[in-house]
Amino acid sequence: MKVRELGRVDYAATFAAMQEFTAARAADTPDELWVCEHPPVFTQGLSGKPEHLLRNIGIPVVQIDRGGQITYHGPGQAVVYLLLDLRRREITVRGLVNRIEQAVIDLLATYGIAAQRREGAPGVYVGDAKIAALGLRIKHGCSYHGVSLNVDMDLAPYAAINPCGYEGMAVTQLRACLPQWRGVEETAIVGKALADALVDQLARQLDEST
Image 1 (cartoon, rainbow, N blue to C red):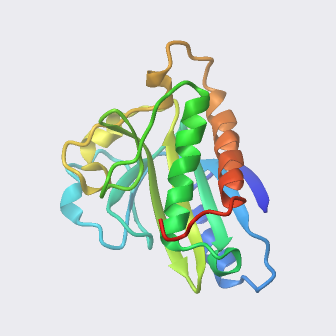
Image 2 (image 1 turned 90 degrees about the vertical axis):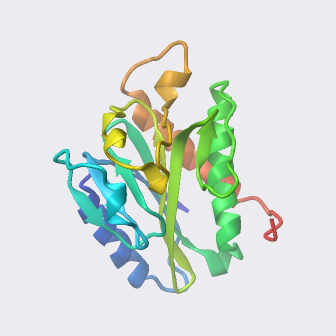
Image 3 (image 1 turned 135 degrees about the horizontal axis):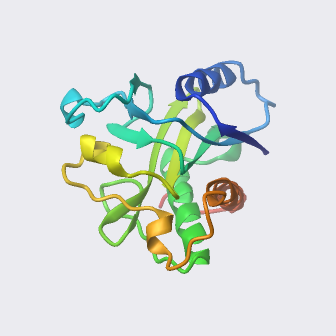
């Protein structure tokens, strides 16, 4: 497993790179996790409905090939893309989603934050507010796209969308959940810690029927 720390990178270029990496994979291509941040961008999934963009606030909308509706990426959000051969790892899509969510829950627990899943709404929540979103594309048994965790960001752009297609869904971030905050350098640190938590989850033998 290779973990690549990309820093702040353009979304469209990173999306294209994920597609190219997946298309060029061979049976022995190592899996990779890409850790990054993006400049402000809305991304709209394959089944995305245009009405979930409530108003134009000057942030570009990129149409992409993951599942799900519209979400926001921006500075201060830790993003990890999972470029995995699921067949080789003998992981189901549901099993991968469970692992991603559990990695976020485990990471937040190290900060003393109790987080949980929500039935029928993929992602991770603190109380009623969403703190992490996930979306995947599976092609020829391999995954790309991944998970975003709100760390220390401007949440205002979320007011211009129905996050992940849910009207009125509240969103939160790590900074808001902690009584003391150590500064903006935390985003890169949290991103690497999330990648480490994902590596740990992917190494475990779990019941793929759950």
